[in-house]
Image (cartoon, rainbow, N blue to C red; front, side, top):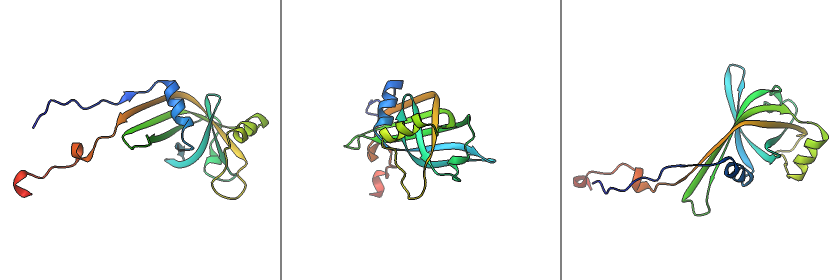
Amino acid sequence: MDTGAVEAEAEILGVHDCWEYLQSTPVCRIAFPHGDMVEILPVNFVPSNGTVLIRTGEGTRLDSLADGQPVSLEADGFNQYGTIAWSVVLKGHAEAADDAVSQREASDGRLSPWQSGAKDRLVRVTPAEVTGRRFVIAPPSRWAPQEPAGER
């Protein structure tokens, strides 16, 4: 039955809103070329001065990122009621950021490792593009397969 209801479209977020959402969560995923494959890893991060800082350890896959290597970051979440979701994608380039200023930015942003061990390497991702969207989460009645009336 067609009720004439129109599905809400995803709202395209402006760059300012994208950064606000990135500041609201400590976890994202980073995707980058690794050999002849693409690697994707969850990482904790901190937005800093229009860039993103990630802490890693020597000898890890993230430590193998070459300066200038293309990467993508993706973070998402939803409101406290679970009714509105958002997703932000940042595309840019990674570079080692082991200078004192970057170390201070990471410390000020409380960027701490999840696991024990030396995690004293920083990677800075400088964005070339930041995009995002926000949308109402559809209830199951809007997407779940419906049983024909005679089979109930």
